[in-house]
Length: 261
Image (tube, rainbow, N blue to C red; front, side, top):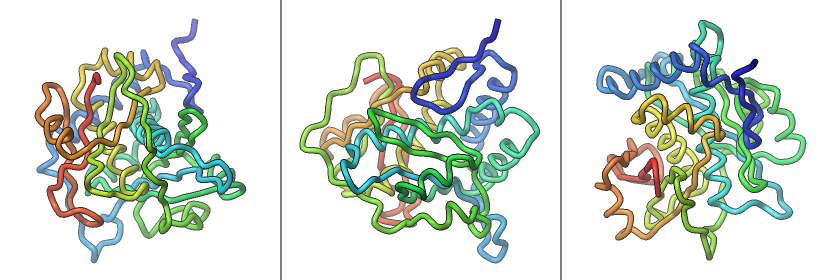
């Protein structure tokens, strides 16, 4: 009898009872527990500048909603980090460990049509939310990005904020974004990806197992600054503060991830 689950929103099978899944979670917990001892990089040593690439499927006709695409990106990122391959000694875990040892950068790109299809066989996870699709790839040094990914554009990765966002669903983890910052879709995708990682790292293992069985289902809500400020101190929530390379000032609180709405 197999313990694998195949969440319909992910393109991978997850054996959440495997030792490898537990190891992957332990490694993620360790990364954030000792962040001060990591996070270094040296521009003179290109291998120390690591990043996870995220591709967002942005068709010209009938583009997805911004909040659904952000949710797909967040789910894809945490699924890469907790894929059982992240708990082995292979290429997947080696790529993650190199990234964990340096600054946890993410780069968001837009794709469509053949460009989107071309990257589906590269190591990573694709997540879908109400038709919105994002794929997160195992990290690499920024000077060694796979050519098929490098072809995808970084600039112009944006969608407008929806006039109406559905409220968070009961018992569903929620990532709140400070809409007052005016972050582009690409920047926000990287931030919610940070949020899903940090949320998984701060939750008990049995909670994470249950979440993984549901394909890391979550909601993303972009909210007013006043509401966001109250969420920063909410019990059980984790807050992402950006290092300030692009779009926002250093130490800006960008997203809050909560295990419940």
